[in-house]
Amino acid sequence: MTSYVTRGFLDLAYRPDLHIVVGRWLRQINLEELKQGYLDMLELAAAHQCPYWLLDARRRVDTDKDATGWMLSYFAPQLPLRLGGQRSYLAYLVAPTHLRDVASDANFPPVSYFQDKPYMSSRFTDEAQAVEWLLSCQQAPATKHT
Image (cartoon, rainbow, N blue to C red; front, side, top):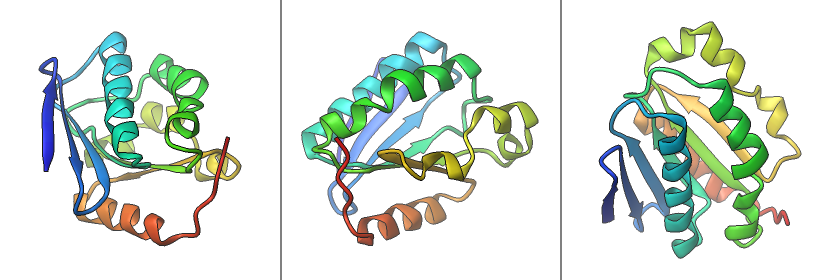
């Protein structure tokens, strides 16, 4: 596993055995740290042309409306441009209480939102299930988005 730590708030790794980029948030972060962390993840993913991401957000307590807006309007459109037009798959590993939080749930788009997007995202409370989902996505027919 190739791994490095970014700025003390995020561990990043590329798992060549699974062809998955893993990002583990180490603490609660502010919006600027979130942006930098996602841009660092994108650099690592682009270096390996890897559109399969496991994002461990269990140490973060919420989904921020501003962060969601930045992700959907600025960050997500960059994914196909940097990853060869491949559809990206982001598996979020969250604490069970996060799934019950109405505000967090309202800030996370429903599954139907992703149908025509060059990326797909889902939330999990079990890491094995998140990895299983990412591996099953690797078996799906490739879709190019530019």
